[in-house]
Length: 300
Image (cartoon, rainbow, N blue to C red):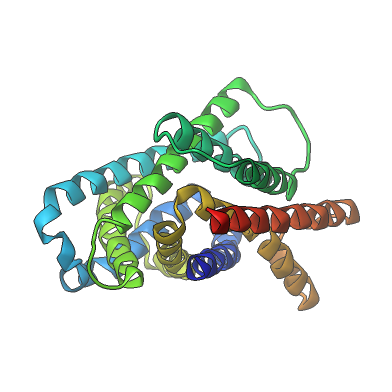
């Protein structure tokens, strides 16, 4: 369990760093969708040459099943991305990133209603604390959401949750060798396929070497954050993995302080003293949530 928690924290750290790596691209091109397209092309170009060499041997007798789940991952991830960027049209990016913390509740509901998983009272308390912390970490208030924005956000939460559950299924299919290696190999296969599926978008977003290179830092850090996340899901399960993942809010706060200290504040949002206090309180709630869920898991 400790290795799974460590993998989740590493994934949260790398995801937080990847957001900072995306700042240079966003400052120049100001298009989140363009960043997604070119970063997926970078990951596809990186992963594709590795696929013949790292494909898990334990899957040789389960290729149809693996291919089916791989296609499911590609579909649910793509729908989640479309829903997320559609929601961005009416919900500010700072608010929607916080609201994605609600994914913990969606995953819990799916686990109980569909998978018939039972959660202890301590686990529910931990989930509620982590959810409150994730939403409160960057909540800034503001205008009310439009019905369309709420609908797209709800769709993104559902399909991102299904993506996490599919990733857990994929990474636990091989039964031989190291889980860390399986995570790297499964990630290679998935993101190579995603890169190929992204190619038609070049009809809308014209290819340039400069955009490809500017997206590379974000893509590289993001990919290895996903490898660590696959390890976390494989060892802890999807719900507990997402509780650990929510710690990226605390990590982002620490990185924000470091950026401000070194005079790099342009790479992070400017916030006031009230928001810093709210983030500090949310960080305490998040830490309590992780501790309580870990304690419940240890007792189980």
